[in-house]
Image 1 (cartoon, rainbow, N blue to C red):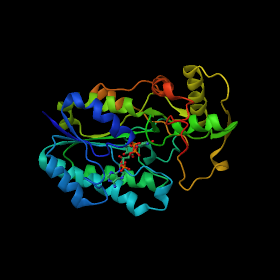
Image 2: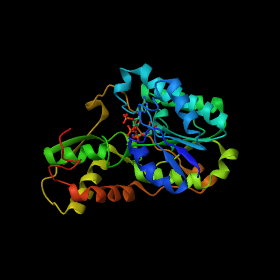
Image 3: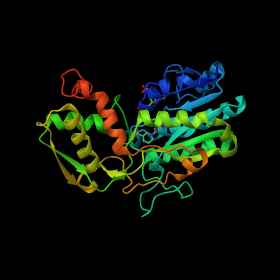
Length: 306
Ligand SMILES: NC(=O)c1ccc[n+]([C@@H]2O[C@H](COP(=O)([O-])OP(=O)(O)OC[C@H]3O[C@@H](n4cnc5c(N)ncnc54)[C@H](OP(=O)(O)O)[C@@H]3O)[C@@H](O)[C@H]2O)c1
């Protein structure tokens, strides 16, 4: 059986990967104690012990605002650790799949960003992720860096779970209308990753950076409305949902500056691997359907206080 190492298995994408990759081999899913990305020796030891043919790195320092006050840790986990994984993967002749972000761009371009456009991250998280991409490229070997966007799912903290919770607690939610992205369901991203690995014989000739997120794009404001609309339909609870008010980023300053209009071109991954993703409007209700049995209940992950 192919041995597949999945660091970050407690996270949104890593959790989903454990089931989507299971048909492809034996999934080895170390937790942070077993493979600490802030510790190079721990990374090397975990990979040498596991001897994987494939590494899918779903671990990362993902708290965008906190990264502004912890730049060294963010850089170690997002910028340095991927290079170490690439070195170990190359030594073993293994494939490395790594997730990066569209936050490597500044969002100032008026057309969709392709993989050939120059990155220019505007915050510490984006800089640390770009450093990780570059570390992997510098090592080389057989790898895919998948830049994704606005990931959500039924686990951990994310925009969908936050909106669902606040929309039942408050009469009005203020959401920025001047930031765009492509909301991507962690399950769909894990499935697309499995599809890429089903075509892994193509990877040695096509190692590189690829944009991979749900088709289409939207603003935080429109996404929040879609979340509430979908939850209202699926739950059958017609009343008791917040109104969404549009604001600008200037009215809601955060520690980390966000890129504004981020639209990525996802044609390359389709052209090379024949892999694409469905529209965010299709993925969102599928995720909310999974949450439906517990929507509005006091013990569910949505309404539980956090
Ligand atoms: N979330 C987004 O909107 C988004 C957007 C674009 C790209 N991405 C990228 O997609 C990937 C997956 O994101 P996600 O949303 O699934 O992340 P997530 O839910 O925040 O999970 C992060 C995972 O990384 C692990 N981790 C953090 N620091 C670690 C360390 N020092 N050593 C070992 N493990 C560590 C966490 O373990 P613990 O459980 O121990 O904390 C967790 O398993 C990341 O590379 C992220 O940068 C995410």
